[in-house]
Amino acid sequence: MTPRIHIKPGTYHSSAGQAGFTLFETLLVILLFSIMVVLMGSIFIGSLNLQRKAFNLQQAEENASFVLEAMAKEIRVSQISGPDTNCPATPAVSLSITHPVNGNIIYSLSGNSIHRNVNGTDSIMNSNSVEFTNLKFCISGAAVDDGKQPRVTIMASVRSVKTQQQASINVQTTLSQRFLSN
Image (cartoon, rainbow, N blue to C red; front, top):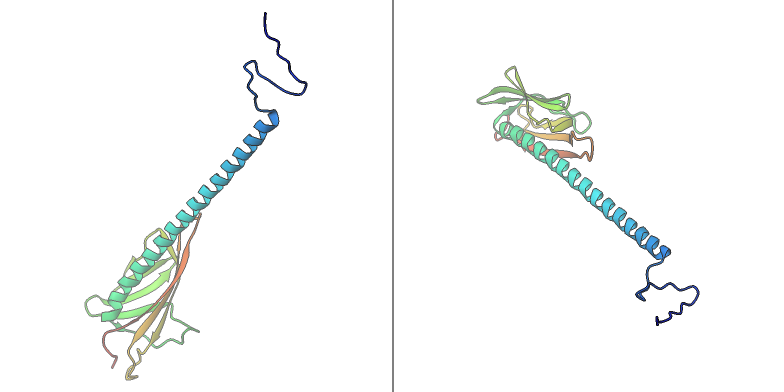
C-alpha cells in the first residue's frame, strides 16, 4: 500500500518533499544581479577613463619638462637679445638668444610645435604626442647698463593629442643668464 500525501491548497511540494523558488523570487534575484553587474561595469569603465587621463597628463607634463629644460640649458649660458617686454600685458611670442657655441637661436611657436631655429636651421622640439597651444616669453633686465640680472619667464600651455580623456597643463618657469648684461 502506498502512503498518502496530503497537500494543502496554495502550497507547492516536490516529490522529494523539498520546497522550490517561486517565479517572483527568481526574477528578483536576476534583477539584483543585473544591477550589481551594471554598477561594477560603470565603476570599471570610470577607473579606466581616469587611468587614461592620468597617462595623457603624464605625457604632457613630461614633454613640457623636457622642452623647458632643453631651452633652460641654452638660455643660462647665452646672452638674451631683444628689449624688455611689458609683462604680463604684452609678452613676446619668440625668444632670440646668442649662444657662445651654437650662435643665434630663436625659439617660437608655429602651429602646435615649438621650433628651435639655430643659424637658419629649424627643428621641432616637442614630440608628436602633445601639442603646445601657447608659448610666451617675458624678458627683463636685457637692456644695456640697467644693472639687472637678465632673465626670461617662459609661459606655455600643453595638451595631449588624444581625443578621449584629453589632458592639458599650463607651465611657467623663470630663468636667468649666468652673467650680467653690459
